[in-house]
Image (tube, rainbow, N blue to C red; front, side):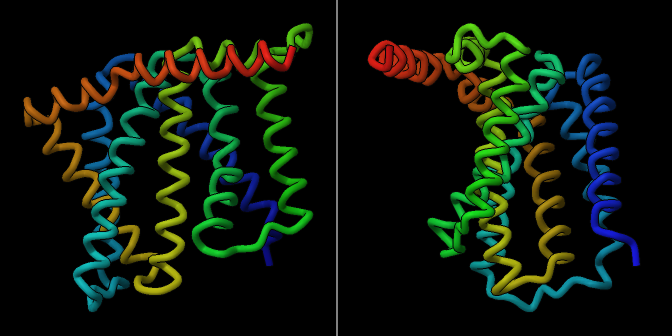
Length: 234
């Protein structure tokens, strides 16, 4: 039997390779166009799962999966925008805090417990993300956070991580109670591919996406809130 850590190492390797290839592709293509093509390929490949799916479920669950796919579409687009315009070395550490988001959301919405080991794990994740973002400059404790708030593309990626965390909690609920993992995977990627290709060909939706991408008000609010809290702390 293959040890679990072999799978973990393999997953890390493939995830890293995917990020590098995705970054190179995004440098040559618009985020919306690239993700439309990529998600279409994933959706087509997922059709091989058809023999394993079961669609004998309530239509309301299908609507929940589609709603989650819309959130996922937005998250993928924001993640692509962040990855396209920012260095992987700065973006990648932000993705490491996703398990922390998921654990907290699962605690509040799914009733999962947060034992001492999980809390310590969350602390380690946050400290590791902070150290990676600090770039070995520890003279100013708040510097990594200030730099993050000044960079809108890092915030794009962080926003995407938050959306993905919400989707993971919804998916956990759906798998535990309604759909098998193959059905959920197939429906999710088919819906996401449809969402991207509809958005790509609709001027109205593209305009709304561009409006959504303008987070200047949110950025200003986050910066002012953090500056106020840091000045109080000092």
